[in-house]
Amino acid sequence: MAQLNIRLDLGGGEQPVVPVTITHMDRTVQRTPISAAVPASGYLDVDDLRPGTYTVQALLPNGSSLRREVEVGDGYAQVVLDNPYRSPRETLAAAVATRPVLSEAATITFESIRPRRELFLELWRKEQDGWRTAPLSSGVDWMSQDPSNSLTARIEIPPDGVQRVLKIGGPKVPVRFVMVPPYVPSQVVVFPRPAGLESPKQQQQSDGSPLESTRDPICVSVITMNPAAEGLLSYALQGQHGAVRAIQDTVARELMNRKFQDPVGATAGAYAMLQSGAISDVLDWLANLTDEFEALSDGLLIISALAIGSRIPEAKLRQLPAMRGLRFKSESDEQVRREVIAMTCLGMAYERGLPLYTEGLRLHLGILDMLDFGAPEGKRRHEWAYEKLQNIKALNRNLKYRQWPSRMRFTLEASEQTDWFARVTTVYSDRPDRISKRRTFWREPGEFTHSER
Image (cartoon, rainbow, N blue to C red; front, side):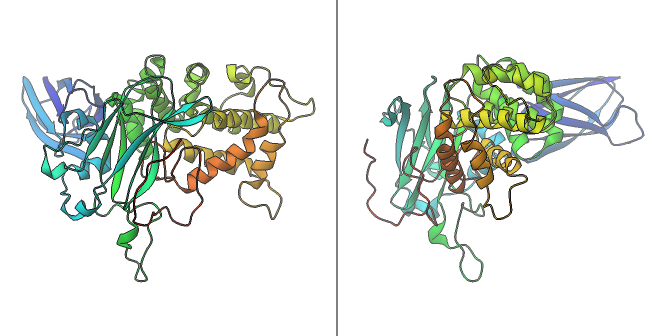
């Protein structure tokens, strides 16, 4: 028997956990294909292999795959899987490996968009009396030492429990605000939108071709310092459920277990486990995540979705800390009680603000679709869910439920202006507390002015 050492080189330090398959070219050999996962260290040893030719394939979080053949003899053999894409900076290597857009942006030139490179960046933070501008403590690193990536910017964001958004715009760049992860260090990367990646709400000409004047010239990516969480979320958002299941036990559960050290990573793990159906195993961890970290609304949206479904017993849902003080009318049936639980969690999520991840907005729309089920004929989309939320009175504690309907409308309007290509919630608007309902997000060329408090 022989040993195979697999080395995965994605061009940086710590990297995401990546599933691999090892297949003997002679498919009659037992124990192949073998499924395993390359840990964050980038090295994996597979023992007790029969001699022969093997194909080793790794599925990367950015959707690409690396494939190599290796001859295994009686002793020790090694195969190296190299990532063909390289980032502008080593600190962005994990981002290139986990985002399809960045992997393309790392290889394109920016000559064609130089006339649009003027950008304005402004950080906002949420305070008791509303959203206020805050200084960028570390400034903006424009990576100007590399001409081919001269437009790429990196902004360091400090870790604390304060909600922040980054406002980005320019004379010919649509204004947007981008949710910034609280509690953990993060970077926001701004780079040109690769050719072929359509802009949100991009208009078309009469022949169906894109109207260039309405094309958003930039992309924005938010990167935390947890490559394992970033990679897992990438698999989940691309619908790579097989990859999620392959690394779930070694990644998602560990992320949820470390919720007090990295609640943002735990949130990524929760979304993945919701998709794979394993979230019911860690419901208490999810409850702690929602109870302890009030700057995150994603966990409450996940619990709301669980309440609408039938996988979690109602009694277990009512034991969650968020449900303390909730009461029902004696004649309520189980469906009504589950809807009340779902709407309560939904309303509490509205109080905290927009979800960190775009996946949360998708989940929100799905919850409203379920609450719309059985609506009277003639009701507009989500109007029935709106009325249910407005009429909820099964509470005996001090929640701001009278404000929930208006905040539901705000979240729906944010969904209409959202960049669905972005992983972190990105909304085309001038301010985080004002969503303008416009036919297009595009801003006519002209002088760009700073926002006032």
